Amino acid sequence: MAVLLSVVSSLVVGVVLVVIPWTTLWESNYLLGPHPLVRAWVLSAFTRGAVSGLGLVNILLAFAEAHEHLGERVDRL
Image (cartoon, rainbow, N blue to C red; front, side, top):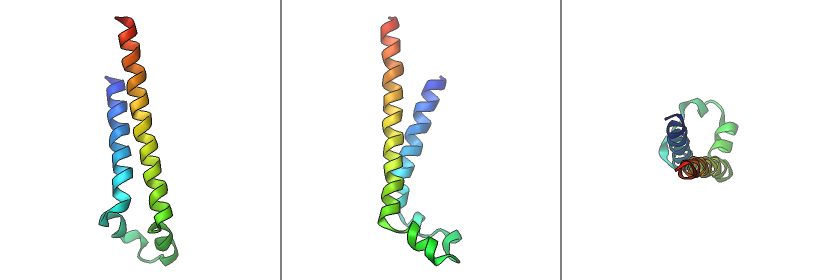
């Protein structure tokens, strides 16, 4: 059960990190209003791509963890 929860949470975090930087939710962050330099950096394509890349890494790790534990289950049978 813990493995399933870990895999699902990694997948959800990964999908959120891949999708959110490219939506208007990312742009409408009220904390960035008073800081124009930070806002420019956060809204840059480089930062958005880096966050999305971390999301892809999370998704790949979730699949690797699922594959590892499914492989252990098959070996036990």
